[in-house]
Structure formats: C-alpha cells, structure tokens
Amino acid sequence: MSAALLMPLQCSRHGKLIYKVFTQTQGHRYLSNVCPSAEHIRKFIIENTEITGEQSLTPEIRLRLFTPRCRFWRERPELWPFDDPYWAIYWPGGQALSRYILDNPEVCRNQTVLDLGSGCGASAIAATLRGAAHVVANDVDTVAAVATQMNCELNGLEPPVCLTTNMIGSEPDAFSLILLGDMFYDEALATHLHSWLDSCVRVYGTKVLIGDPGRAQFESHSIRQLLHQLAQFELPESVREENYGLTFSTVWCYRPEL
Image 1 (spheres, rainbow, N blue to C red):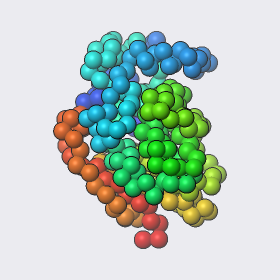
Image 2: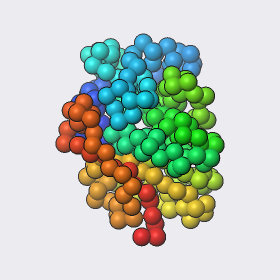
Image 3: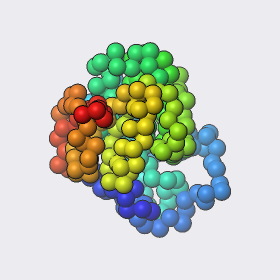
Image 4: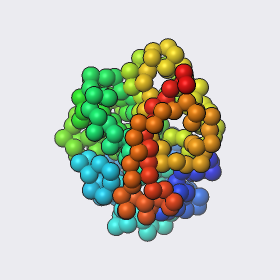
C-alpha cells in the first residue's frame, strides 16, 4: 500500500486506525479478479458502520460511517476485506464544502455537478438537496460508490450517477461545477489535479470549489495562489478531536486567472 495514498489518513484518530489496518497483513483482502456483489457490499457496510452525522458541520445529512463502536475499530486489521475505506470517514474539507453548498443553494441550483473523490457522497448529497440538475459522484473505490448510494437513500434522495473510473487526467466533460474535498493531500496528486482542473476551466468554463482544512501539502502547493476564499468554518469539537491540529476548514474557488 502506497504511503502517499495513506497520507491523509494519518492526520486523524480515525486515520491512524485505518493506517494501522492497511500497513499490516493483507491476506484476507479480496483478490483483484474477485468482484463482490453490490448486495454483499451493502450488507457489509450495514454491519460495520453506524448512522451518524449529528456532530459534523452538516447535522442535517445522515451518513453511514466508522465510529468507535464499529467492529473494525477493534478487529484484527488483516480481516478487513476491501480497499482503503476513505469513504467511511467524513473528512473536514468535505464537511466545509457540504456546509457551504447547503448554506448557498444558488451555487448548485440547476447545475451539472461532479463530486470528485466523492468518498461517502456528502457533497453530492448536498448538491442534490440544493437543486442540482445532474450530479455525478466519482470515486475509484467501488465500495465508496455503494456507500454513496446508501447514504443518498438514507437522506431520502435518488442516488446520483456513480462512476468508479479515474477521471483525473481524462478528457474534460462539460460539468458546470466540480467539487473537491480533501483531495490535496499529496504533492504529486495535487499537481496532476491542478493541470486537469485547468483544462476543465479552459475548455468548459467549469467552476471549481475546493474544501480543505489547511493541510501542509495544500498550503504549500502552487495552486494555493490561484484560490479565492469563499468561507471558513470552525470545526465542531468532536471533529477537532479526530483531526489533530485542525480547527478550521475552508472553502476555496479556483481562479486560474489570478
């Protein structure tokens, strides 16, 4: 497992658990040629997560996430059968982005929206709640796609289109709005994202909103100079406790002309 891929997980208590899970023996994980059914994944998610969200920046959105009462909070790490469960944590950048969307419905109303690196699907849910014309949730993890569908249903919504192909670096699609929460955790990924987002803006005039709690990899990257701050949110106490040293999360608009 790449240390770069695990980087964002090491900044939280949840993340330290997941980091431990995925740096130890992987003998029981599904082989790449084995594809568990959506029904199996749904059952697994139900059995190993809890419905929560009340202590987040968006208490009106209910999500299935890891909590200390869940089995894999204390289970032997090698028994975890899937890829890294980024989807099982409501990261602070995504919380700020979703809160901003809920507070500013005109941002998504009648827009075609891509939630890139969608994880638990909270930003896609917020966009749908605020009247987006079409929403696509993109995450390379199939389990994340199922979790997003389940979380939409949990909030009384029709699930969005869920794509598991890696869209970063692909030919830009005609989305009017792209949402990214907690994606700038690795310098190489940030550089790749910067180039692709620039293409989306140049070809289609896409608006890009970014949520990030001020991680070093984000603050030190060149894209930081091309962002306009839209809002900043103080993280709830429980979220602070789970994310050592992070007290605020900010929403930015990408402005390549700056």
